[in-house]
Image 1 (cartoon, rainbow, N blue to C red):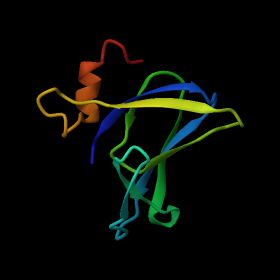
Image 2: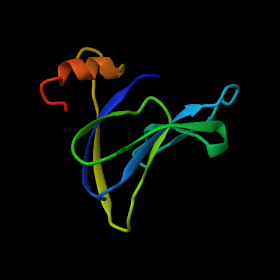
Image 3: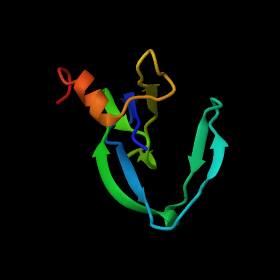
Length: 109
């Protein structure tokens, strides 16, 4: 799945976000809900291979359609606002990374 959110992070300096590939033949995974009542797939480390990591610093487009997590580098609170991005006509579909890059190309580094 290819889906993008916009994240704004406050504090948590040096935190790293990690993305993972699902190992061949692993899954399906248990579906649960977050505290906000949104769907959430529970992945287990034995089912995943590390794909990429990146420091989280400022407002960022984040690929949320694949397994990912974030680790704080030190004991400091980290607050994140994560907004699902979509077109008004099709909010349930969300944006792909290519669509988000095209829309926000003036502001990306």
